[in-house]
Each structure stands twice: as structure tokens, then as C-alpha cells.
Length: 53
Picture 1 (cartoon, helix red, strand yellow):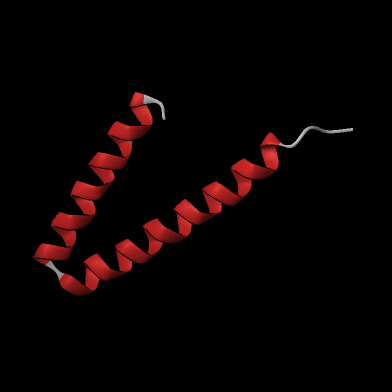
Picture 2 (cartoon, one colour; picture 1 turned 120 degrees about the vertical axis):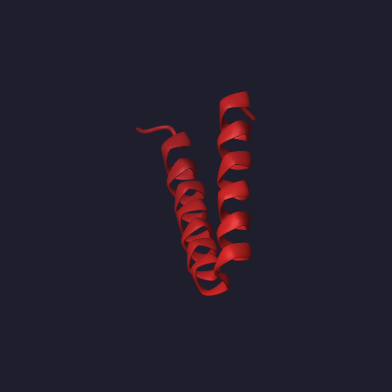
């Protein structure tokens, strides 16, 4: 994993954790949004790795 990606994931995790601590409903909503975006990234990244014919 690229160091920039690791740093970005760490920053997002800290922000989500802080939001969940300060306002649990907001933290839950942001956590769900982060998971959905992460899953979309994984799915779309896998499609880009396939060679075209």
C-alpha cells in the first residue's frame, strides 16, 4: 500500500472516530458513508485492473 494511501486512511479514521465520540448519530452516518465509499472503490478498482481485449 502506498504511504499516501495509508496516511489518508489514518486521517479519515481519526476524523470518523472523533465525530463518533462527539456526536454518535453523526459518527454512525459518517462511518456508513466511509464504508460504502470504500467498498465502491474496491469494486471499481478491480474492474480497472482487468486487461481489455
